[in-house]
Length: 568
Image (tube, rainbow, N blue to C red):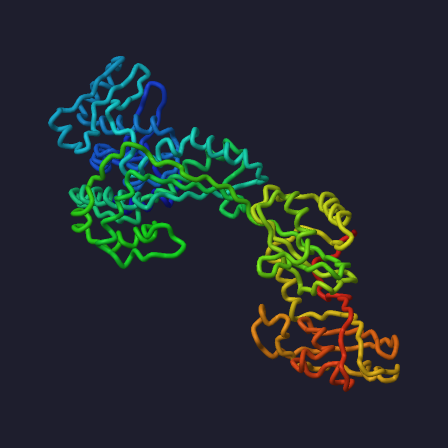
């Protein structure tokens, strides 16, 4: 079975793929304390020896030998190293092995290589004699490089329990509420360069055996890392890793000592490294990978040491962040004040009103959900001097990175009562948790639904009751509204067609009447009354042939059937 075929079968069969005790090309390594198997074939032996000689860790040896069995990576690093060393030392002489098997093992066996041979095989001085201790476990000599020259320590101590506990301490101290998590890591881009250098050596070594090797068959560093670390997080946190979880734990690794590893690629492949405004460095992981695909092997080996030099220190976790996906709270609000803007009213850096609808509602939500910030949205908006009555205006609040994500119906009802008792200017109803997708129902209503208004109107010319009744008979009145002067600073100049579906007049005195209107969403009611210097046609002034103005305006209903009504 060829190299590529064996790899494909390994991945297809999963956890049982490499368990073939009857296969002569798999080596079983036995110890006095345990019985286990290295998932490497005989043909892997020279490759594994070469990789270990120049300072690769056991897990990188497995990756570069295309071992897809997850269990092979999950054992502690030191145990894997001991087993790998035993695998490489075994079967050197079948007769000697048979003899040793027949006799009881000595308590301490020193396995030594010829000094000249060792120097020839280990340019980094990493291939050292190994010993079997009293417990029967092989131990590497202290002079073996401590930090992997391929992964820079990522697949060593940085994926074992001590590191996991440090990350979990950060998670637990942040007081997040979560039932699963997604773990994301960012590795320094030079790891791709070092892996490429190691792969070229593997390709050359296997070529001596007449075997073809595809770089795509290498187990990706990030994949192997998560195989190892996910079970450890489950053990420590008690919740599973889930790619769809809204709670994310992200770790950024760096290795300043080898940052220069990527520099030569900028000269060899300048088209891959283009400055970007939101990037601190042009040497991103994707740019480096693209460059490695373009550069030929000869140029690469001229500019980068193959095998890569062993580092003195491992990578460090320079940033550990926890973030929860946004929580969305929806409801309806009534606004009873004519001196309260919907959102903070700030002009030229100066605040004009002391509070706003969004602040009076959101401050309580941010506190209870322990969110970093919030985003407020609603189905339309009213002016500062306009009240919103009836069942209120639908709104939604996005709570960014909340620590709490679950509230019971009783807790939501208590939150609603807290908001309502804190101010007489704003009241909320139907307060509930919703999904991001559900908010689209509210946004659809901004243009497609209808709204009902009540306007108190003044006319310069004296009027009688019969002078206004003609408005009651007007249906589906079409308006051409040029962007009002008062909103021209934040809305593009355009002529918008809007519909007044119906009107009902209520006479007060010879200069005042109240008009109830049912209109298309997005209609500018104030401009329909006074005309906005002729920018809205027709208007009440033009219909009456006199100057008209609006004194008060109330929103009586916003006909959006969302969010669902609750028993308040």
